[in-house]
Length: 114
Ligand code: 5GP
Ligand code: ZN
Image (cartoon, rainbow, N blue to C red; front, side, top):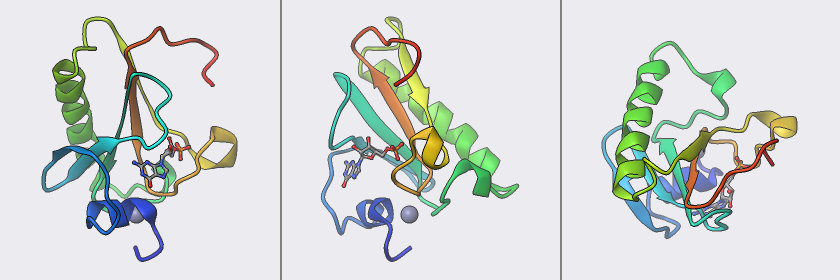
């Protein structure tokens, strides 16, 4: 989608530090990391929020979880623990309206989330 910052990252029109790419998903480092590991994992398809997922998108997100598993292991945070989260709509804290998952770790996560 033309105005979407994450679509531009996928198309490499905006530079970012990629950590993974395949036909369905990409992962890149968050520009403003909130933890030592803060990687964004996103579907290549422009899906604004999780509420906009179509039936065929669910298998892509299942694949995305597999990629998250792989990245967490590669970054050495799997056994220590990590957080994988998505924000939805304004009160969920969503700022970028291209579905994405934050993979965060490398420090003790606190609750409530924030
Ligand atoms: P949200 O609040 O929508 O769940 O999270 C959006 C995330 O995207 C934020 O953590 C923010 O730092 C990150 N972000 C926004 N713009 C860019 C960008 O241009 N490049 C990268 N790598 N991350 C971005
Ligand atoms: Zn997009």
